[in-house]
Amino acid sequence: MSEHDEACAFAVDMLLLNIPFYHLPNENPAGAKIVGHKEEKPIWGKNWGAIKRRQDEGISKGLPDYLIIIPAERSKYARQLILFIELKLPPKRLKRKSPRGNKGDLVPQSEISQEQIDFIDLINKSADVSASICHGFKQATAFVKKYIK
Image (cartoon, rainbow, N blue to C red; front, side, top):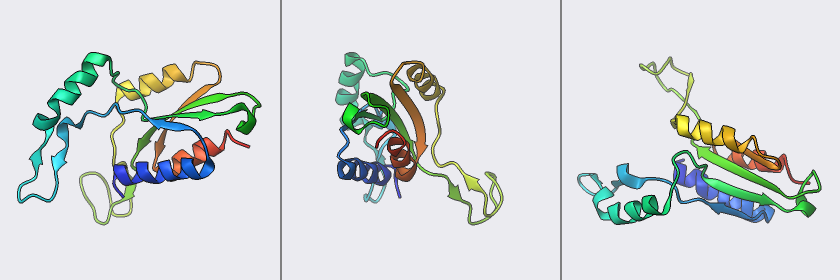
């Protein structure tokens, strides 16, 4: 599954659980590629205006991907909670030995930036707010379920 597929699966889980959530559009698609062409080409040129607009409006490096609100009546703690999730791809098993490890080893598919770590640490210092880096939609859904009745 791609990161997009993981995100879509997580969104479906939140809809099925009837939990209010929002995907925070903070990604920088500058490295995105047009897939399906003879030559995959960077598309950042077409999107630079939108990226620049978001930067001017105040996007923050490290801001997690999702904001989830657990209403008090659904919370295990009888008070409203705010959750943030940085969604990453789950690790994958190597099919053969490579510079990243030996056959069968689990290796990360997504990098975690220092800005993401710092932002999540800052969020976790707040009362009634919790943030986590989750590897895959299953881990993300399990994180949310820890807080609901």
